Amino acid sequence: MLPAIRLVSEAAALAARRHNGMARKGRGNEPYINHLAEVASLLAQVTDGADAELVAAGWLHDTIEDTGTTRAELAEKFGEHIADLVVEVTDDMTLPKLVRRQRQIEEAPHKSVGAKLIKIADKVSNIRARIVPNPSKEERDDLIDYVGWAEKVVAGCRGGNALLDQTFDDTVRLARSAL
Image 1 (cartoon, rainbow, N blue to C red):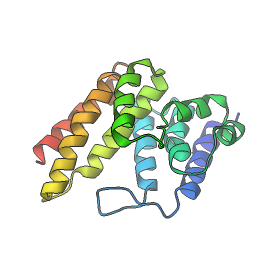
Image 2 (image 1 turned 45 degrees about the vertical axis):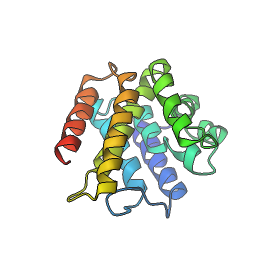
Image 3 (image 1 turned 90 degrees about the vertical axis):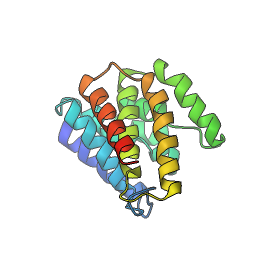
Image 4 (image 1 turned 90 degrees about the horizontal axis):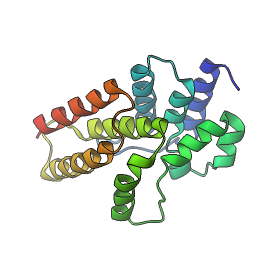
């Protein structure tokens, strides 16, 4: 196993290479890597840096879903645990959006603690990206829809880290006040 700092920095480097050129929704189409950095940073903060594998998985959480990266590749480079976490939070993109969303709600309570933490951090980041000054009706509707769905997913993920649970609640309050 790689030393903690190498594990995290190599995960960040792979995530950056694999997501190169991708943009995220909200915040003016900022580079997608900013989302991965925010998720990893949240995980590092709420665990006080004590779980390098979780932070590395935070960097990598969308690589299978959004790029040609495979579980085998992640396992070889970062170990079975990180590969398992990434697989556990990966959506089946062949399914329609509403089916994927419903699956996340239904499967959330059955995830490992690490996968639940990644899911919550991911939802925090995605809500934050949707909070924009002077939102249009479409942006407002998207934020309302996303927050409502994210609350249902996170309801099944709570209890693994009180600080992350509180961060999610604070983010939801901020989103609602921005409407």
